[in-house]
Image 1 (cartoon, rainbow, N blue to C red):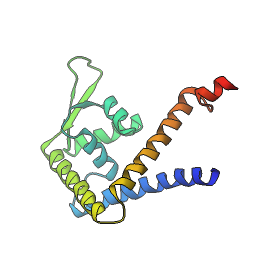
Image 2: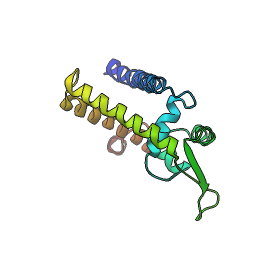
Image 3: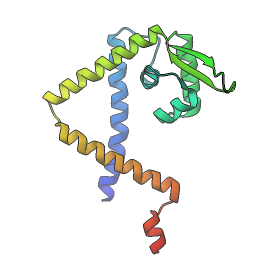
Length: 159
């Protein structure tokens, strides 16, 4: 079990880095040099909504300072529009600009191409569902550790 657990952790890390390279490649294909792959994923997470930086941080699981920096760069480069919240002047709300919407739709098309390619290729929908379920179980396991410590509640009470 030790080997498999570590393999899953390292695989998730490698897959994340590799996916960032896929997004970077798509940005290069689109000849978009004023936004990086992380910013493009943040932009994709905003989508057609208007969010606070805090909501964006929670939704994408980004580090807060990184989101603030990247939001600032995306505003400077014309991908996002930001404004102070009318309800809480400390809070800044962001939404996609026209330029941001164009990139959002290009990224959505990239995902649709990936889905089409997957259905013809190396992984079935069932296998993808099983992988998703296993990763969700890992997420729940790590969430329990963060919430309750190294032992799960059932084992902690039995000990």
